[in-house]
Length: 572
Image 1 (spheres, rainbow, N blue to C red):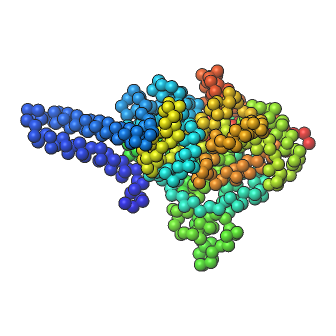
Image 2: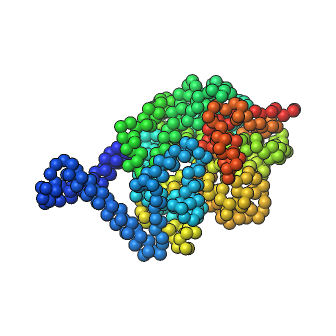
Image 3: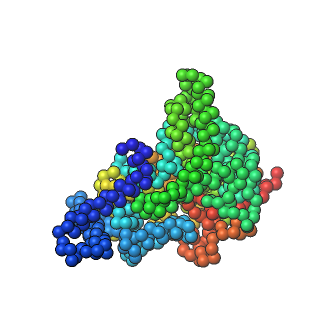
């Protein structure tokens, strides 16, 4: 089957429904031909027979699959996790509530509640969501994440259904970027940092990383989104997918780009193809937004292709040019190049912007940390751009960034799918036995919830304390068990932009702290209506009860309505 059909969600949905309905309907037709006419006369009776046989067929199928998986688990010495028991058939109520809570509640709160008491039982670190009787394991166990990302790496992949959810939004990236060798190039960062203003920090950091990525990856200095009008503080401003909805040429890209990420999250939370695919069968929600993103990206590719034609058969030297130049040397396929650029732009823009936004937010809440950090910055680099060696010496800066990444990892939720059945580390409810996972099972893992577990990080796990990254005993525990901290993933698929994000965020924070000595959060005064946490959050356990911004997620973490900060200029 061609790739366009294999990952076309409508085609695959029809095939899945055919597999579910055709066998029982054939059985029903055969059975009806043998039954007395008294029992089958009329459309109502025939429909009732067919429906009953379909239900019986599906029930037997589910029971047989459960028996088969349970039997296989026993043979391997593992435990097959039972599915949660919701109020609606197939746990549809739980699946729909996950998407609803994502919109209305604290980030990942809906999952946290299920961990606390799945089906009314004991607290667990891994459970089986079981939407539409399909196994979906959800975990906040760092040992399971270690298995999925590292020790059992060859047995886990994104899987075909993930491709169906994201193909229209992000396409098929070819993964040829060699960005790791250029993370020390701070010239681009400095050029844009000088434009920063005190307003919606999230919007500014998103523009900064957009502009820097435009030049760093695409060789383009035409983005200049920081030169375009910024959203003013206005309680009546219109909310976009993340912050205030941007206007003008930047908004024509940013809005659809962020909507694609939002739709991808909703599809993931709705679960199997039969849920989200049916809801979007007549209208692909991503189509109009992807067309708008393509209109922004395509001119960059076309310019590079023109340059390639001018060069003839001669390829650029590996040390020359930018990412798009090297991509067009590899292929003339416009779609393939476009998909790769969009994937890399997503990672380059959102990861660093998220880290910078939440770092600034936490410094607003902790002026003592702000003062200590600024003292370190001025000790090593009182003015001017830092060098790579300067950044490496700043232990407290790295501690602040790590603590921010612990509490607010850019990718709070991720997933993989098992290729074959395998065993995962035990949960406390499995009596020391490993967890059996059937082949083709989706595993959702939650770094944000794992990195706030009190049994791993101590009773102060919800608190912002950079000192935990300097204290020798705590550092030793993290060194001995590195999978406690996974803001960039781990194993062979660890984020290639990890060092890029650390260096970019360090550079920007240094330049800001050279100029400003006080950050004041103005969320209540300046953020658009509807973007501040509701009053019902006050006093709630964990960070929910103390948060003064509304953390949310699409593919990456963000602050609803932006992060509105006033920065006081330091005395010279």
